[in-house]
Amino acid sequence: MKKLFFTLSILGFFAMGLHAQETPVAKTDSIVFDKMVHDYGTIEQGGDGNCEFIFTNTGDEPLVLTAVRASCGCTLPEWSKEPIAPGKTGVIKVKYDTRRVGPINKVIRVASNAENANVVLRITGNVVAKQ
Image (cartoon, rainbow, N blue to C red):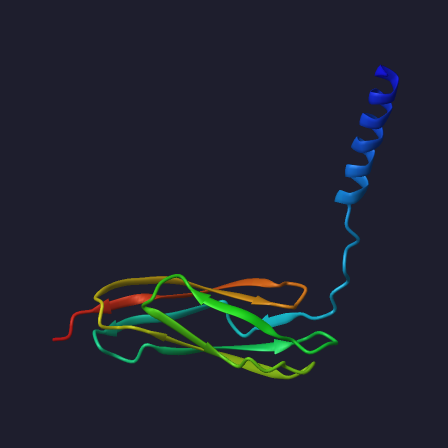
């Protein structure tokens, strides 16, 4: 009985190891941005908080942005939900709420079906009080 239990335990251990190994999926899509950081510099309170991040699909398949999320509610990203053909470009438009005075250091996370699937973009700057 002990031999049977020991044998089944060993077989179960090896079966779990085989199940845990996944075959990697080759991805041929890639996303390249014109910049990774947009610096607003010094901007007046209530000023223009718009910027754009232009990206190119350098892969062989259509590129789909599955999610674009900002680190807080004061930053609103907008992007096309349509696939971007190989060699074509797309735009992520970002609107920062400049009613808040102080430094800007926000993150925009971009998820896609590309090989570099998770990209982090930044916006920086400083909002000064309106005079």
